[in-house]
Image (tube, rainbow, N blue to C red; front, top):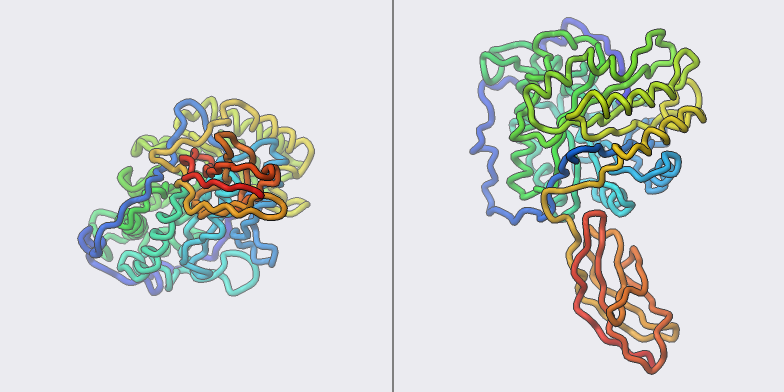
Length: 465
């Protein structure tokens, strides 16, 4: 996420229209009152023991000039992987609540069926952060943290969780990107800052406490809906920018706790302004922020650099910055188990893409080819597809036409005949043109995806006349 500098006035300390509450929503109030549903069999993304995942934001920026990060297209993933010289583990996109709070089914299925894990950022804002007006407001008055805590969006969030569970697809999700940055309306500055007597615990700063409780509220809802296939990320950033040094903006106050967080994500960019005269390496910026030390001290969860990039500029060597970033993660930060490049920008001085220059592209391809960053995804549950059902076979002039009911989380289907695989397809139908006339064949279908394979379906026999 690109940082926007905001004009902060004294009136912001009033926290606008944020409602004041003297108590948290209790666990009992948040619990689901309806009958308990069966959880998804698919589990959470596990950290590799001695390697790291590589993901990306494959320039899903909307082409309409709004720069919204939700233009998910399989061709963009293909283009990035072709340039990178390898596949990625996850593909990252944003869901802006003002556009929709419905489960982003099409985007999730597009990414999963392309072969990657969908990673969605849940952004509670009522207007676009970039592009032409109207833009998001500060403080947020519609999707405020207080409103989330009070349960105003529980029906939509429950529906989101239900739809996610039903896919049985592993989904990575984060709520409130780069929470310690004042450029986002869910930062503590806009929600109570360091006030102690406006909400909740009188010893805890109200701004971070509201974020923590909103995050916990959402995770509790998803658990009640059995959405065990959602892996939750907590996302902070290393940029030194007001109010970074305010005591209440310490990331430890925002952290919801290991009972609610599965992974910790960090943004760690090099210079993203081509006019910035200051250069800082990936390693120096991460170390000087203190976030790695703070978070590894209070949490046992794995970390990932979920956003990193740098613009192309004659003042510094982008290629070397890229090489040093990969090397730093491998050599200096043993808890970091994933990296995700933010591939965005247009040709010119604000180009953060890996192919902004031949040297940058060579550097990225070389670093990404390191075996350390070739980890294959592992999950805590069974994310393999269900067995295809209702297989039918119909003889035609051109062969035997097969149809079946597919699995929502399948990416491919294997077609088996007489105990041997004869083809594969991404559709839930197949025409066997090789079937001989006056010969009976027994067919079966098996679904596959990056997490595994189903059992073979029930057989059906067909005879081409």
